[in-house]
Structure formats: structure tokens, C-alpha cells
Image (cartoon, rainbow, N blue to C red; front, side, top):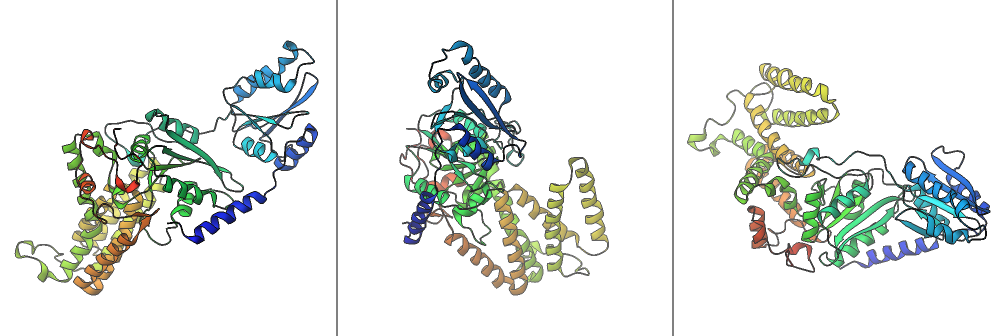
Length: 504
């Protein structure tokens, strides 16, 4: 249930929005010109375009942002408007003539200057007519950006090679192409007092939970911020209020097929203009350990790949703490595993070696991100030869430390969700420190603390460890095993879908 504090905040936000004065479009076109010049800096900002035409003895003014419109469309509209002088009677109603002669599939009208300015800054063409209290808004947007391509972080061997881009119009089209259902909704709102960033809420009307949908809309409408320069990440922080919990409470994807699959299950998708990453809500821990590759293979192969990935995730979290515990207390090792542990202790304590090597891997990851592609090979040679081998030879690291740190790092890279891999790395470092300080008790205490954090975590009123806690055997079976699609006839209960059957 939504708290009284939440309702109070929502009411205050609505009241504040109502207090904002809406300036109507003036019948005198010169008044509108003065407003636009003052508000937008006409003649100061070079990218704000302005044209004035005389059509049937009436002044018509066009406003647009040069970098956000398709020039060919603007020219075509202007040609059609100018031709009115040659094709229409001088006594015709210019407003009605324009209404019928503007050649574009998407033409709307606005009665306030605020709406006109907001739409113009979004890349639309605004047309004022002298003597009219309404203006025309024509969608001639052509945002600069790249073509859809496969995301680097979600590659598959078989499957589509397109991916979301920074253009929200293209992103909605990529989703609509996969879900040609009349009940698919794309609701657009604007957030940010200065940026006025477009945000699209996508959902299936007859499937998505209305309570969750209303909650997300209320949270978005309450956001009061200058702009969303970090786009989707800023929206996430307002929605889930994560605090210092390192575990990801929403799932990101740049793949239209992954996003469409979640929409069909009953999830809600949030698209933020200028970002190729879509926010999927609600999300549990186990959403972050699955990958599209598993569903591009047969159920048996998909299950095998999934279990290998589970082993990698487990190793990334527990391998180093358990190995450190066995090194500190060799009596815990059975006789046939007595070979585990460094033959020589070296000049640096083992725990310090582990932490230095683990943090060193993070240094290399950061360097790889910021290193130009032609230099990445050279950086890899430096890391492998100069840092790795020489560090072992001088006694800074033991060979076995490098081995287990490398295996743990590979498990980290095998984790599908980057956000979850970083959270697991932080949890691993805490487990290493507690294990070194308190041995077996420290490892148990650390694991207990992590489990308690995960159990108590909720994302948009959704239990984070579902279907393990609360337990749902059928859902857990589908997480452990890749089930054939004809056998998956129900939607996940955790999203509280209106329609439970997935093939109805």
C-alpha cells in the first residue's frame, strides 16, 4: 500500500504544476514573436531557425531547431505553404487552408506558448498564423544518431543483430516491430525543468499490473530536477531509491528481443531519450543471471550454458574467500586436496596479495574501457607479461594467487549483468576481509549478511530473491532449467499480470 507520505508528495507535486501559469497563444503574431525571441534567444542562438512568410495577406511564422529537424521535410512544408498564394482565393480562410494543405502525416495544434516551445525544442516545427489563438505543431524530427546495431555487452551467436539506439522514436519502432499488438501502449512524458527529456513508458494494456503502472507514473511525475544528463541512471535513482545497496534493482537491456520478451511477460519498460538502455521493471536477482543466448539454443544446450554461467557467478563470489580460508587453516582440507595452497608464502601476506590482484583486475578493466582500440592489444601484453609474470618473479604475488584471481575474474565477466558483477566483486572483497579476520566464522557471518541484504531488498514492492524467497517451485524450476517455449504457458506471478496465460 502506498504510504500517506507518498500521497502527500504526489498532491504537492500536482499543486505545484497547477500553479505554473500557462501563457496562451496570442492573436497578434508580433506578440508571439516577442515571446519567442525573449524565451528562445532568436538572433542569439544560431541553431534556432525562424522564417516569416506572407500567405493570403496574412503573416505566418515558422520556428524550428536546425539540428533536430529533417531539412527536406521543412523545405517541402514551406513549398506547399508558399504555393497557397498561387492556388487559393485571396479571401480564403488561411487557417483552414493551412489545416488542409500541410503535407505531413502528424500535425497537431497547441493553444499555449509553453507547449509550443517545449515541442519546438524537441525537434518539431511550429507555425503561428496572425489572428489565430492556436498554432500548428508538425513532427519533422530527425535526431542525430547511429544506426541500430548489436549491443557490445549482449552479443549472441545466433539471433538479431539490431539494438536500441539513442533515438527514442527508433526504439519504440524496434519494439513495435516485434509486438504488433493493438494493446501495446507507448506513453510519453517529459521530465526535467530545463532538459525536458522525453520518457516513454511501454506496457501491454491487458497484461501489465495497473498498480505498478500507476506507481511508476506517480514517481516519474514527482521528479523535480533541472535535467537528466545521465538519462536512464538518473531515472533509476528516483524510482528505486537504492541508497548504498550495491545490488541492481532494475534490469537494463539494449536488445529489442529481450525487452519484448519481458513486455509479453507483464513487465513495464521505461525508455529515456538519448539512452540506448531500456529499464525493465520489476526486477529480481535472478533476472540478472539469465542471457538471451540461452533462448537461442535448444532447451538442453540452453540449460547447460545456464549452469556453466551459474558456476562462473558462484566462483566470482566465493572462490577467493574459500581458498583463502583453506590457506589459513589447511586442516579443513581433505587428504586428497592437500596440494591446494601456495608452496611458498612469499614476501607479502596472502590476503594482501589477493586484494592487490583483485583490485588490479579492476584497474585493467577501467584501462580497457578508456584505451583506444588500436592500443588495447599492447595494453593486454603489458598486463600479462610485465605485470603478471614479473610480479611473480620478484615475489610480489604467488602463482596460485594469480590463478584463482584470474578464475574469479573470468566468472565476473561471465555474469550477464554488469551491475550484478560489480556488486558481487564488492561482496567478494568484504568476504575476503572477514575470512582473514575471523576464519570460518567470518565467512559464515559475511554470507549471512549478504543473504539478509538480498532477502530484505525489494524493487518496486517486489521481493528481490523471488522465486526462492518467497518460494515458488514452478518459477524456480524455470530459472534452473531452460524450459521449452510451448511448455511455458503462464506468465511470472511476480509481475501480477492481469492475464496469467502467456498464449491467450
